[in-house]
Length: 362
Image (tube, rainbow, N blue to C red):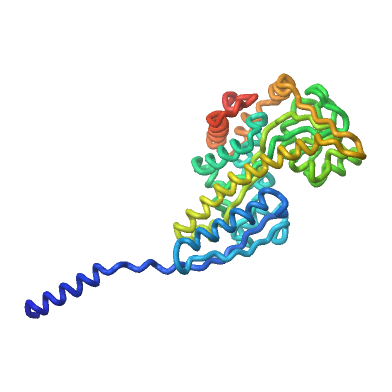
């Protein structure tokens, strides 16, 4: 090859090397999302109205060829309450709302908020703290992953109150009463001499109406639409705090198969979904309290009374060492102890003032 040919080859090769690299064509994905509750509930409403469209739009913005086509099944169309975890883990749904509170055997560490009542009544603070824990404490993330899931964003309830047939003006009035409560929250009645009756929002009305129980420990945003105030018209605002019930999760194999860009979008959308759920549930909570206190014709009048701080402190102090007991029951007490401390410190750092310092009793 002479000098002229060599120069021509060098120039042509340089041109090829300097040519712009074309973006890798995107990929179209089909994802199924499901939940056991209807879209009238805040945590499902925002899956449909916030999470799904955000993921669709952000994936499409990655460039030509990128897209997500969603199949949405709400209101228990794909799986029922007791199968929310296994249905997502088995791939019946790629993404789903998982009721962690009913999965104590599979997600034992995720039950931590049940061991710390009176910790915080601000739902937005609770959700922010829970999301931080799931992002920064490896044991919590690993628990979801061992069950074939990737945690995307937390849900929690508004603060718990008492709905009773007869007035309950203070802690002493709990003695001897049969109070319906979810199984995990029966702990919150220990030491009061009340009798816990296992139940759920869907059973409270009938249980109280038929005398199975004298009232319920429940949330205003759930009690109002189910008309629990009709059979338990005395509402005592006791503010036991918010409860971490579960959240949005994705099948781990499906998540791991996604490119990093899409994984990032899914995680960010899950966190934003959680924030928006907190805002909406907090607003519905305030609306529910106002509706309960509004004048109404027919039926027993509803009375809403807020307990004094002294009565709430008495309840909190009479509880056994719930967090310490919970830590002792875990397969990994060190991990559980770390979660209790991180949760309480996270709440305090955000301005919460717990009525009882559960972490300082460990």
